[in-house]
Length: 299
Image 1 (cartoon, rainbow, N blue to C red):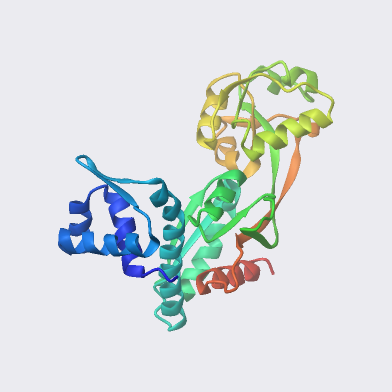
Image 2 (cartoon, rainbow, N blue to C red):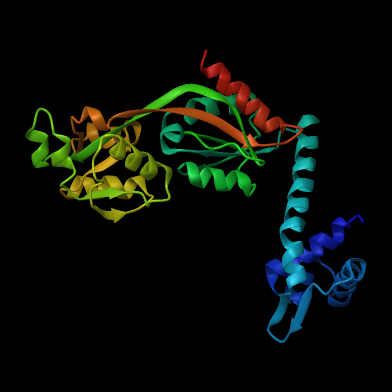
């Protein structure tokens, strides 16, 4: 049974607006006409999709079941049109990139400058996040391509390749922290100090805890949890708390004399970068062009 794109669009518009009247205004149709479209869809499926209430339109369990599939079909239709326009040379495509902070700072500026010089009408959106955020964004079709550390491949995500770019995690403190007076800081000392770290489910925190465990230590007390590198740096610079960040993310603060790397060799670890995309039989031209430019920059 084929679903009519017009019916799906009407269904999604009602869901987003929560009202038959507002949805009709958005679609530039009358309320009776929109109601008939939904009634035909419900008749075709043999179920009721909405509860008509005084407060608006509320999805039934059948409507909830249809919603994610309707969203995917709508997104795929929009992507197909975008790909066709790109292949026709219109060059008005959209490229949605997800990247960890180090990549967003050190890799993307030069790559995108070259890409946009060749394809000036391309519109680029950048989402910064750690690996678990990028994984979720890829799966939910919020981004087209992701660059970061290791992300497990799945039915939805495939690794495109490894990049030559990388970074190094280091322990950081305020430049005036008492431990900065030490030529070499023992591991036991830094484990006694409070830390500012991402939450437990974030990939950097998992890597940190795994490293501490391999060293035979007990994880330190995390006084503040945040996913924001900016907040981590601000807390570290203004307190005696410690942090653990990739060096490109605190390079500016280090140059300004606010933050310094602590000399704890055992807690320094290098990270490789990989590129991921959703599994598709056809790669969007915008993604293909981006990957080609990224490869050129590594030669």
